[in-house]
Amino acid sequence: MKKALYTLLILVLIGLFAFFMAGAKIIDEQTNVLLKLDHGDIPEDVKKVHDDLLIADWHADNLLWDRDVLKELNHGHVDVPRLIKGNFTLQVFDAVIKTPKGQNYDRNSGDTDNITALAIANRWPMRTWSSLVERALHQSKKLHGAEERSDGKLQIIRTKSDLQNLLSERSKNKDLVGGLLAIEGLHALEGKLENLQKVYDAGYRVMGLTHFFDNEVGGSSAGIDQRGLTAFGKDVIVKMNEMDITIDLAHASSALIKDVLELTTKPIVVSHTGVKGTYESPRNLSDDQLRAIAAKGGVVGIGFWDGAVGSPQTTDIVKAMRHAVDIIGIDHVCLGSDWDGGTTTLFDAANIWVLTEALMNGGFSNEEIYKIMGGNQIEFLKNNLPS
Image (cartoon, rainbow, N blue to C red; front, side, top):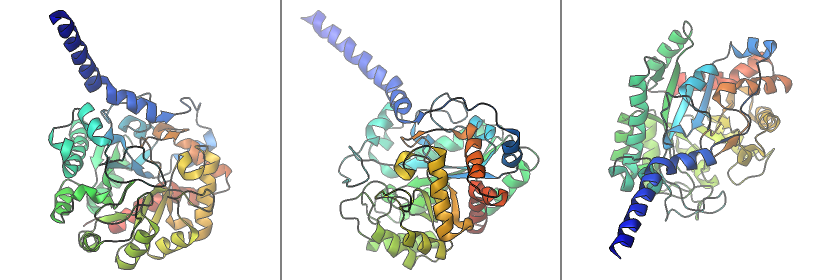
């Protein structure tokens, strides 16, 4: 009997060890899929255009996973070496705070949470297991730690001068990339306005109001009530404007988008989305929403995955971009990959040139490609980052 109990205990301990050391990595590899590893050599005509771009992307969830962003991996989509290989100027690194079990694009409650188990498996500090704001602070710490170890190859951008310094340095040395911190869902504030200052101090400059469920700020496109701004949410928007924090309306309900655009005094971003004009999805933007966002000086990041554009094929990504440009003009369309967000894509950061090629084949001019691939995002940040 004692021997059986001893054996059982050993098996339990082995199972727990495997969960802590391998569980999160297995989930990462199974959910962040790269369909094509070898795209061959970049054609010379594409290289000529691509090398002159300032490439920037509004949304990647790399910080959620058990990885070192400074090490190049053969799975997933983003790390600093691949960003440098792809000629990236800037990548927004997003902190995922909470997701519901069985998450979908139609209807979710906030009563369950997948991230607690992932935080434990990732060996995050115990304080992150129960505190949403601590999850944001920890993911910021991860990126800041990487910056310190990067020998200058990763530079976190917090202000307009930080961005200008990055652009100046990259004009002489392209073996470096900027990182900008974002939050996916202001349930991270835990209903406390004072936590906005706390996450700002941690370096976050772009903040999505909701994710897959309604929260204290307002409604999600995949929430139960899909409401607009709450009273607390209105206070948050006013404070974000005062602090020059960029509002991200990805995952926002239609009512929330309307309320925010009426209240905000600053341009907003929709970091990763699709458009209903090419692919019908509850979380994609209608033509009227596109126009309203652009009228306020906002920009829209077009996603690279099937849930946004119909398939991960570059032709579908370019089709969505063409529709958005036709509706709101070339100055309002950007990249919004959703890399490493549990997505399957055809290319990673190192091979972003295949999208440059697809835009060329889609009839976009070199100037238009420059704007879509990063110029618009860089210009937006030049105007809207804190001084």
